[in-house]
Image (cartoon, rainbow, N blue to C red):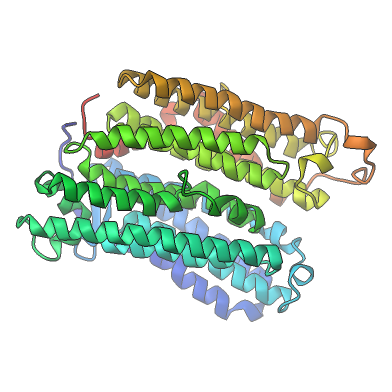
Length: 510
């Protein structure tokens, strides 16, 4: 076991404020939609900015050696929660800025023909804020049943966003998304109930305390192995479905492809991370008692990373390509965290942070292509680097970062995962992980070259009038590209929070 000193608990309003604020703001946006889309955009930008401020304030207090609690320990923010909240809020504020011009350009009346565009924008931004609110709620709750409820709430708000354009493809993707995730995450509910019942059956916890993750962790060693295996199996299926872990991932490519690009950014950039957070927070309870879980989850992570990249390599649709690459990259996160060692958890969480940044960058870059050309297919595009220089550089940075190419951030986190797997003697996993990185480079850099530097197939001339997207669209992309470089060159920027979060998850020596 990794020995860590129990931090002091401090009652605070911040854990409640971080998710109640966007939920209430969503109702304000919905009610004030008649004031115009500028009001909706302004409220969303203001709310997401305040959320970032609250997230940094929480992280600063956690740095001070305390755990923030609220509502009688129903809400609890330690370093792991603070890390996830920072990721959600950071990507959220950048995406809200990106969405201003992008959604104005989406031509909602032409896409669906339902409702006035300004009213539809009010609905979009209300759902956007509720999506952020439910994700932060999942990160701060300490109640295992409420964890399921919060994760399921993210499904409802994001499902409506996936189907937002309301055309045939969007409705099909939304239906598939809601159906598969609702069925899948129901397994997580069963797993949470088993954990609660098993914790209460130990006789060490009162009825309410058996619902609190922080309390159940202390008695996990008293839970019979068979009961623990049942709950772990259900949790892996449930939260693994939400997190895009293979073979529970079929919803992911359709949802990412048909959702508005800002929603794709949130789905891939943060929502699947919240699901993996829920999986890590619950399953890690049993790591010390049942070490076989580690081998199974590492194997599942390796299978996920390899299958995802193979499927990505054959895609012509850039959004579907990025969706499958998200599946692959979640395999690295799962494999690292599953080791249960400090180094493995550090690498997994570092890659979780990095993936949120470079995958948001890649989806925004594809959104910029859609904005400027109306197409997202590699075969339709070519020679755009001269006309879209900022977008081309940003996409290339994202492609190199996700491939683990130095000096970008993906190199450092992948290297840490490799070292953790090697330290545990799992050289077969190291080999597959390195191979997957090489295949990822092929899957991402090849279409980058074809779209931006190669000549259009057949000398297509309809792209002659293409111009770079407005600054409010490429600005967030540049911020994320700079973050990829900064975390690659100076990885110590994130060390303090990752160190404390890793110590929480680590359960075996290493």
